[in-house]
Image (cartoon, rainbow, N blue to C red):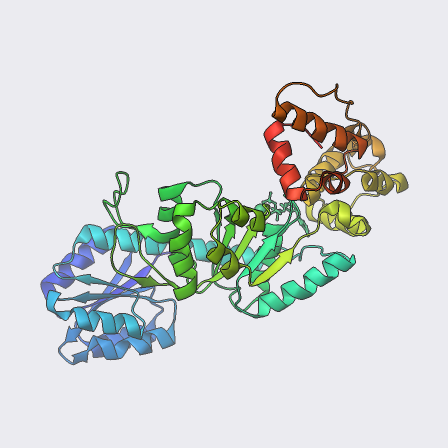
Amino acid sequence: MTVSLLIVDDDSATVFGFSRYLSNMGLSVQTASTLQEADTILLSRNLDIILLDLTLPDGNGLDWIPKIKKKNPDTTIVIITGDNEINSAVEAMRRGADHYLTKPVNLEALNAYLSKNIELRHLRQKDEAQRRTAKKRDPYFGTSPAMKTIFEHASLAADNNSVVLVQGETGTGKGVLARWIHERGPRASEPFVEVNCASLRGELLGSELFGHVKGAFTSAVQDRQGLIEVANGGTLFLDEIGDMDVSIQSQFLKAIEEKTYRRLGETRERTSDFRLICATNHDLSLEVEEGRFRTDLYYRICVFPIDMPALQDRYEDLPGLIHGLLDGMCSVIPDIAEDVVLLLKKYHWPGNVRELRNMLERAVILSQGETLRCAHFPGLETSRKAPLPPSATGTLEDVENMHLQKTLSECNGDTKTASRVLGISRASLYRKLSKTKIHA
Ligand SMILES: Nc1ncnc2c1ncn2[C@@H]1O[C@H](COP(=O)(O)OP(=O)(O)OP(=O)(O)O)[C@@H](O)[C@H]1O
Ligand SMILES: [Mg+2]
């Protein structure tokens, strides 16, 4: 869809230059040299972007800003001011303008800002269209006591603005729950912005979250908005927060507490009103104890913790989950042989709902439209039989690994029992297993 832009300026040379430049960018451009003219255009059509000079022959552009925002809060207002009018620019931002540029306007800076703005506009439109057309399907919560409590807590969380910390093993549905909380809340029509803290280190994560200005570091070739800014009005979902680089943690704490942040390389403070949801599959209290996670940040994000149970702790939800997952992947839900659920209940599901979904997907393919049978879940029965390890010799690490393997084997691969026998949390056990490449 073509983006509509209105230039309001009484300087005909500026209007001419901007108009040509912006039309070449593919925008549908209109111009006005007085507030009255601009107001007539505002009433007659929906404007995506307005470039607004403040000093106009028939009034001050400042007074017009609330009217624009009232008509359509999504209209982006970019103020064009003289060098000596910075105070007016600040006042304009206070009244609802989105950005300001000083004269003489650097066209590259204008282009960078508008390109990003247009990209975001398209993303939002796409998201909105998908939301409207997608078959609305709530995740299946289940009827187990643990999941009933989670449903109640998540519903309460959706209605308010507190920071939510979703904890649980991999694949338990932390991300699914975070999105559900967003979609059930008052910010549902605003962006849900997801960042995986484990995939980006140090400066890169900082730049992704806070944005940067041109030249802030070697590869920063132009100004860039951070995701905190993109999440303004919506929800910022920080996945794997336990892996957030310590160097970023203090800056991020400030962004949560004061809702202010600075782009990398910039001194100006910006504000963003985002709702924060975090998720982790680490034992965060252990991360704090071991000095990898800041205590103050931990307490700041631990306002509303929700612990997702492992699938093996809610076997009663298996039938409902199977039904819900199959409904999501097939146009017609296939029949399921009686002994399939029994077989699935015997398995310990280290990958939780994700693993269940993947196994069901494979079974659907293998069954070729027929009834799902145990034979369509190859490997399930053998997966619990780990060979007994030889007696422990070698380094301390070797001995620990062998003890881990032996305990797991004696517990039939049940990580919950094994972690209890070993006297460590399940998260610690998974961490040790991932280091040793032993499979539960
Ligand atoms: N309640 C649910 N209903 C339907 N599908 C679910 C549900 N919970 C999880 N899933 C499925 O399991 C997959 C994994 O879920 P999700 O990514 O939310 O897990 P996670 O806990 O965030 O895992 P990780 O820690 O690895 O990021 C999802 O893609 C989704 O398909
Ligand atoms: Mg996740």
